[in-house]
Amino acid sequence: MAKQELCEHIATIDLETLGIASNSVIISAGVTVSRYEDKDITFQELIDTGLERKFDIKEQITLKRAVNDKVVKWWYEQSPEARKILISSPTDVSLYTFYDDLVKFFKDKEIDIKKVDFYDRRSFDLSKLEYLFVEEQKVDVPWDFHKEYEVSTALKYMGFDRYGGIFVKDIEGAVYHNALHDAAIDHLRILKCLHSSI
Image 1 (tube, rainbow, N blue to C red):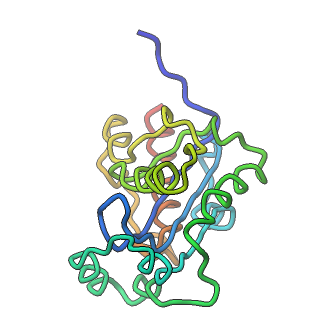
Image 2: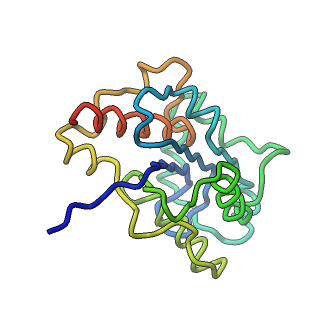
C-alpha cells in the first residue's frame, strides 16, 4: 500500500451556526492556511493572515435556512465575548458571497486551493459548505474533496488527544467559539502534534 503524501499547505476551517442541519444558518466562518513546515507559526500570525466573515443572519432566516432551538439556547450559555457574534452589524455580508471570498483568499496568496489539505471538526463545517455550494448555489466545491480531514481523528492517529495539548484558555486573546480563533487553534494543534511525532 502506498503511503499518502501530504500537500504542501494545510488549511483549517471553522463555522459557527444556529443549527446542525446541512442548511443551518451560518453565523460566521474562519479559515487559516500555512505550509506544513511552518511549525513555529503563531496564533496571531494565523489570525492576521486568515479569512474571517460574519454573515447576515436575517437574510438566511428570510430564505428559510434552518435554526435549531437547542443550539440557540446553547449560544446563550456561552461567554459574552462569544455571543457578540449573534449581534447584527452593518458590515455583515451575504452567505452567498463566501464561495468567491474563499476562492479569492487562496488565489491572493498564490496557493492552488485544489492542492491544500483541509481540516475541520467532525466533518461538520466542510459538509455545511458543500451543501451551500453544491445544493444551493449549484457549483462544485472549490477544494479537492479527497483532501478533507477531521482534526480529532488526525490528532488521534498521531498519538494525541483531541486538544493536542493546546487549550483556548492558554492562548492570550483567544475566544472560544470565534470561528477564526477556533480554526487557528486547531491549526496550531495539528502542526504541533505533527512536528512532535516526527
